Length: 131
Image 1 (cartoon, rainbow, N blue to C red):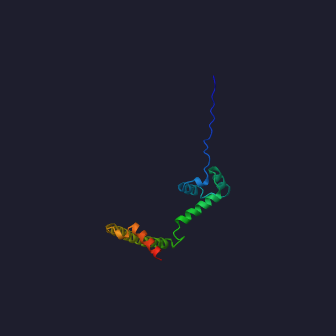
Image 2 (cartoon, rainbow, N blue to C red):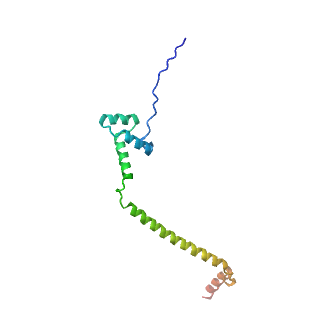
Image 3 (cartoon, rainbow, N blue to C red):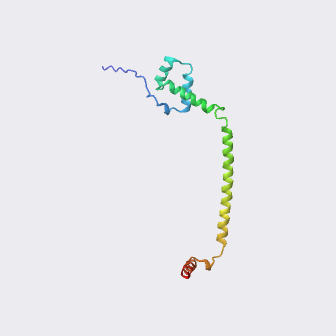
């Protein structure tokens, strides 16, 4: 009889690159590693394929995004850009209306036989010969 011995291998997922971590995963990692310092933090990071400086960068990134005081004039800048956008859209709409009106009236004009393409060239050639 054959005896089959199965050895239990721990299921090890290869660590992801730090740039592959989604924001919610980064936040969870920051929460899990919050109280760790020194060798405990380094061991935790090694298990996940990270370095302590990457956690510090992620924390800094989260603080910059959520801190309302950083870039305090951001609301003012946004408001200014919205006003400028509205002004430009009004000008564009005004020009579109003028162009449509000009095209409408141009289509309504009867053709002028005196100003056909051939008569224009003929007049231009006659004026050159007369000089």
